[in-house]
Length: 353
Ligand code: ADP
Ligand code: GN1
Ligand code: MG
Image 1 (cartoon, protein in one colour):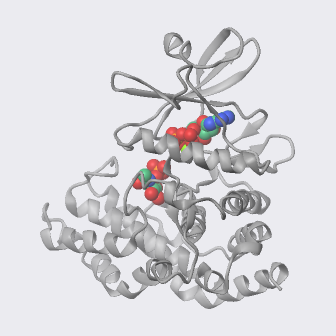
Image 2 (tube, helix red, strand yellow):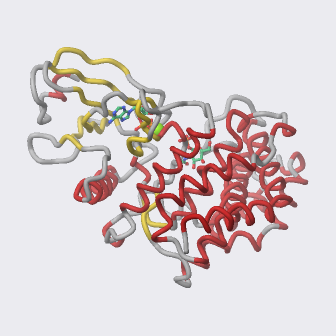
């Protein structure tokens, strides 16, 4: 790795290299010189076939934020000016280390929820005027829920592994909700909501918080930035907070929509994004969580039916269990849509006049 590092523009002499963080996708290292600290990563080429496009997306997004004086990841270029280097099968890139930060794996408080949402709100707000046409889709159709539904139906029809009989109720539920799947996609296509930049992995461990103050510093892990509506991220961010540690759990009773958590997230988010959100987007906020939960349920269940080809599994029914969790969450949200709409309306009155 030292030889690879020599090919980057680093300040000072390398003193130490060690493994860093808990990411599941990339291999991350902390590199220390006598003057600076850096984070270097082997980018997962299996998940991301177009590393050039991916790094160019990150360059465009981070330059846009930096030009506005916002904190963000900062790429360390190679000496030949490229944004990464390729070494055989490996793709290697670096960022400046963000000092004094923590990226929590677990939710600790509602203040943390509010701060994480503020972080994503600041990210979206900063990017609300970027030229979206230059951003490539590193995973095409990622949140195209209508396409996800077609893929899901194809998996049901094929029943390639004879597993359909284990998942009848879940399949029926997802087939019955077809009308939800066009809510975000059609609003985008009609121009009722803005096409902008989404992060697409808005989990709490992708937010850097200041170790001392607990305030957000910036959003990390920009590999999946693509075009879309911010509602994808709000929906997915809330979805992941609601399922928390239970994404793989059989105890569906634990899965209730936590209204104070929803309020804290929407409050944090709109405190940053209120100047750029429109009425339709506000109306769709509660539905965004529903749609993303249903979409992920279709992805898990489709993968179960296909024989677990996308998501790694620890046992044969793992993806079925995961799908059940998302379905339980979606069903819970369906019974709380009025509460969520009321909270959203009340919070938005604070920020939008
Ligand atoms: P993955 O895609 O594998 O999740 P991430 O880009 O999220 O990879 O990085 C993994 C972890 O490394 C993060 O959760 C964070 O703890 C740490 N990390 C990544 N980039 C930086 C950085 N620039 N400064 C400090 N820590 C970082
Ligand atoms: C995958 O591996 P992780 O947690 O970063 C998936 C997300 C899902 C999530 C569900 C590129 O993300 O879309 O929401 O699993 N990422 C990709 O746990 O497919
Ligand atoms: Mg990460």
